Length: 75
Image (cartoon, rainbow, N blue to C red; front, side, top):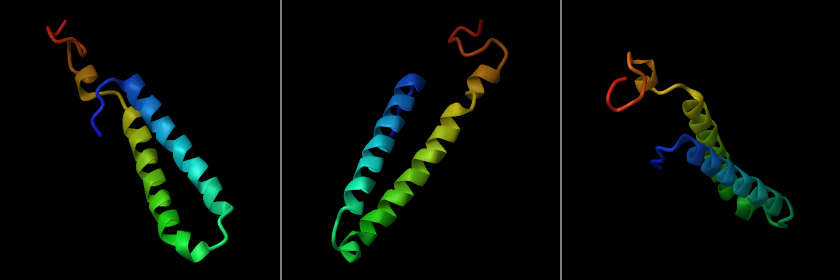
C-alpha cells in the first residue's frame, strides 16, 4: 500500500481495522472453529501489520526534519 496523504492513510488504516473487527465478530458466530483457524491467524497478522502502519504513520517524515521543512523549494 502506498498512500502519501497522511490523512488518507489514517482513514484507510481505520477502515481496514474496522473491517477486520467485523470479520472477527462474524467468525465468533461460526460453528466450526477448525475451518476458521487459518483465517483467524491471517486476521491477527493483518492487525499486527496495521499496528505497525499506525506507528510509522505517527512518526514525523524525514523531510520534515530537514532544514527548510517539507516544502519542495526548501523554504
